[in-house]
Image (cartoon, rainbow, N blue to C red; front, side):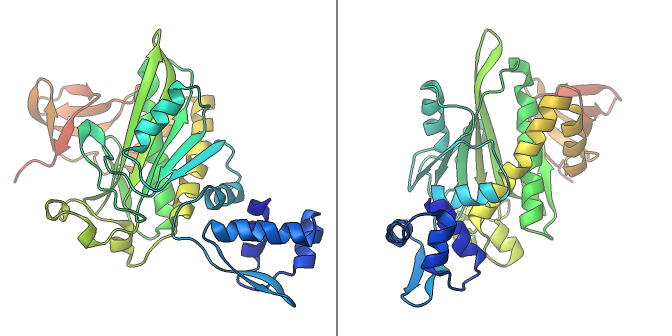
Length: 327
């Protein structure tokens, strides 16, 4: 009920909405309206009440809440997310999501935190997660597909996030570095980590973790990251609405997830290649077999990166670290 009240108040764009109209719209008493307003205020929303004019929304909490996220997701007609759990501080949203998945939590369970004390990225790296300035979230998928398709879901997630951030942070030129880092001008703004559990070679569940540097300032990054990391706020010159970013991501993800389940990997492959900043540039690759310089030219049908070596041979790469060659 309070989700609907919040939606109606937001539609007024700061103008008053009478208690009588709210009562008629929701078919509940004005006393019940008042009780729901109090619940919204307890959640951090600032609502001005006038005996003669009604209610108007004057401020929102500077935190991600189930109410705000649900409202944003509903506005974009996102149906994938079934349950939202928000925390002030956690060690890692991945850890919480994994425990919930083991306990049987359904696909579409979303974990969001204001702060992570041990946020992690690929290869065990730590993710900088200052309170209230980024998006730190994990969600559960149960695709029921063979284990070897898991890398494709990683690439799908990267495409969805890149498309969402390009939309909400236009005109920033955001691209994907193999396999799923998002960059602006060569600096990282987001990381994606997918962890899966399988049984008899089929995925039991996938935990998709996403960290986005949204409203961080330069002081929030340690000195060693100043040349390689940035935030949307730093690049755009103004803060962004974090709940809008979350909703935009799931809007894109849900559309692509449905396409993927219906048509396979080919459409995702095409979109990833179009958004990539990795392709057609000689790159130093660090592989299990050693270091080599090769030129990435695209993805194969399994989601591996195809790279052409100096002798003309093309090799598929499923996992590696890469940086531009020196000189």
